[in-house]
Each structure stands twice: as structure tokens, then as C-alpha cells.
Image (cartoon, rainbow, N blue to C red):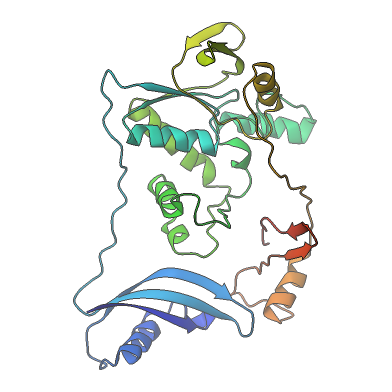
Length: 320
């Protein structure tokens, strides 16, 4: 017998395997000696009334539950495989490259900045000496603007793509498996550079290319078709298929598209601000305790408010 059961447990019961096993036996009407196997497949902390963890648990009385291995679905490239040129090695560019490999296409990625580890020196120089490298900073370089921003994984939409596949790809490249079950998955700044490096190695090992310090400076269009790109002002490269994954900070690319009469669509925008609260205040509001017990994580919250046609919402939070 296999079933999926939702239960709520107190924080101190979260890792108590014997308690969970006893509770599941009770819910299924089993005896104390009946064999039972289980694994948590979803987990969230709920502090709205009383503080509990809500768990979705897969249960089996037939035998151990196997954890499906995460395998890359990458096709071997043929010598004749078509190339897709990708501008930008942020999240969009790297995942576009992985998708190309799955489709049997050869990704060729050009990134104006440096690799994720070399960026650290430029960011340290920016922080300590206030000297900005215009091509290697918080916005530009392998991993994109999010490479040094704590690694929170957040989306309000479950309809724009295979979110689970993205999470599994990150686990495959070094993220903790906890991100597959947590309601608010989080990688961590210390782990992100290694994960990004592993994704790069997957792309290279399977026949793709990644070029750093390679800035797109022109798009050559003839007969309303993209024919070639210019890298660093003097390297002309013929292209058949081109993906611009340059992010919102590469304003020169927006200007270039306008100059080359490439259609750009307007979209709504949000103006972001940073708000800081003492962690003790947030803990007290969420947990109702003046001192947070060690068993609980630093509390977080989100805010949503609509006034007429204008909305205010919190995009993410970094507890602690």
C-alpha cells in the first residue's frame, strides 16, 4: 500500500522519526509492529495560529521508498549538430544552453564578464576601493546578478515552466535536496558559485562552448534576418539562431536592438526598495515570542497590498 498523507507537527517533532512513524501508523490504522516506510515530499512552516510544520509525506507498507535518481537528459551531440549562439551567462543563458543540449543543439555562449570565481576579486575591489569594472561587477559575469544574492528561489507562478525540473537541475549540480521539498527553497550564497561552475562544466563536457570577456557589440542583419554578431568590436561570427539572455542591466543591448530595428516590447516594471527590520522584531511578530527558540529558523514574512491599480509586494526576504 502506498499513500500520501498531510500532517502538522510541532517544531520539536519535525526530525523525530519515531514520532512520525507512530503518527503515520495511527493515521493508517496500523499496529505498532506493522512495517512502515515514509519520506517527506513537501515541508512548510506555518506560524499563523500556532507554530507547526506542515508536511506532505509519502508512505509505503510494501517496502522502502526509492528516491528517484536525478539524471541529466542530455543528448550526445553529432558533428553536424546545429549551433545556437547565446548572449549572456546568467540564469537564462545557462539554462538555455542546457536546454539546447537536451534538444541535440550545440550552445555557444558569450559572456561580457568573467567566470563566477574571478568576479569575486572585482567585487571585492568595488566594495573596498569603490572601483567599478564595467564588465565584471554585481550585474555582469557568469551567474548574472543573482550569483552573489543568497540564492533564494522564488516564483509566484507555477504555469510558466517546469519549476521542478529547474530545482532538480540545481540539485544535480550541487544544491541540497532540501530545495525539492521546502516551500521556500534556498541555496545559499556560499554554494552558488560552485553550482554555477558545475553547470558550466556540464555544458563544456557535452560539447557546448562558453566564452568570457566576450561582449556583444553589434548584430548584423541582412534581408531582415540575423546573419552575424560582432564580439568585442572586431570578431565577426556567423549565426543562424541567436538568443539574447542579457538581463535588465545591459542597457546597451536595448539601444543596439533599437538601432537595428529589432522589435522591443514594453512591459510593466516594479520599483524596488530595501527595507530592514531587526530580526528580533520579525521573530516576535511571527512567533509571538520575545526570544526565538533555537529549534525555529529566523522568521520571515511577505507583504501584499493593492491600492487601486497599484500594487505593493515583497519580492523576497533574507532572514537573519
